[in-house]
Image 1 (cartoon, rainbow, N blue to C red):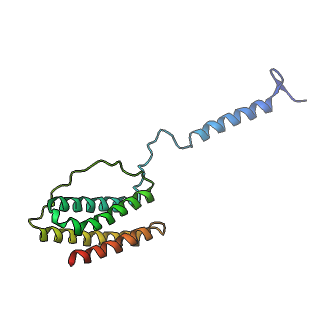
Image 2 (cartoon, rainbow, N blue to C red; image 1 turned 90 degrees about the horizontal axis):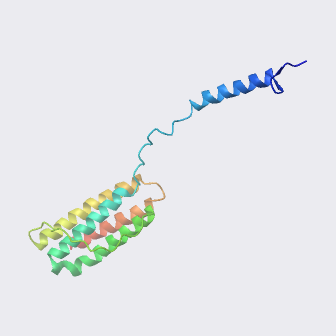
Image 3 (cartoon, rainbow, N blue to C red; image 1 turned 90 degrees about the vertical axis):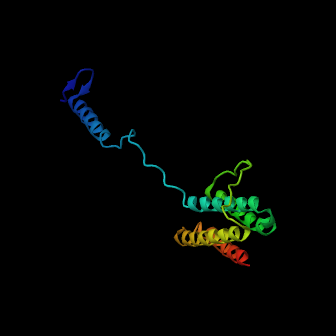
Length: 161
């Protein structure tokens, strides 16, 4: 005949409940503590390309502001970079920037030829960065980065003429 422990519980049921409580307490100590700081999220793979594109836009705006006679020649190239910026932002899931006018910094070139040479050097550097990023990118982003690299290579040719 089973031995009953107060209010109709058997000794086996009480011991089983106690064992379950002890096991639960032990397991609770093994779960990760939610108070531990989470590692910072890694940057989006297109963050560097986005920054480089914005830097080229700023450089073109500064050159056009400093040398308005170059505007007709440089505006199509600037438009390409703005399109690249929009495509990168879209690929990253970022909203379109608000239309706030920015004041371009001085181009730093002493004359128009120097300004064009500085843009050409920036395009060459940007093209190299885009090729490197394209080769390292996942298949998801490689076409976008490859087209940006190709476009920058054509800009180098346009600026060489």
